Image (cartoon, rainbow, N blue to C red):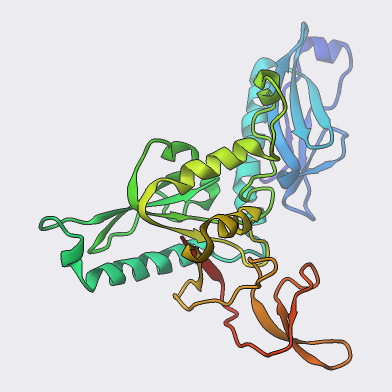
Length: 314
């Protein structure tokens, strides 16, 4: 692990030209930030790419963010490669913590849904079991590998066979059930707000008709792997816009639940919000959408709902 400032070997030509910015410095006050040479501080979450470029006299490491590119020049080839590897390792080490700050535990929610599904199938195995030892296949899918709840060791159950992989790797596979993790809005959500391929626009013959069209296709791939049913687990404070679209398409076939299986009463206006009781500024008790004030729906008749994290079953 990179725990302190580190100097990288400059090339002979860089020393002759008196280039002296060859340091990677870590921010002691904020362990998620670093500084290249005399440049500005950069945060791990803002980095979109780390690349090494070669000029005639030396190598340069480029750090690309959504707004600018910052460089460390004058390095030898070995020094540039070491710096790139150190940066990638440092960013990946802290990225998981940054993504998970303030978010529910999708790993715990996934295990609860798996236990529920296994218990449900145990009530009447004769309806689906074709032979002794037969278990139904369940695919747990995620957009980024940082969400992997199993770390290479999927749990074992009596009636289901569980495996997990990313949306990309699920193409062409089939399962009886699928569970999609973190179908929420955000940079690392669904759709992802990060441009993974900077060359993508160069090979697209014309502009896409829909925002995040490639992400939409990827979500469709993950959504259509199951033959019996799909569970979508999302952050109830930032649900993916795709959930509302699915409700428009599926209607009553889309069911909103807590991870324990309790039915949730959804807001009829925005669909993804829940009806909850709250008190207005003048002291009036009303039942409104949990996404207030983003959603202005209000109901005069009180309604009681659960406030636990939500899961969606399709």
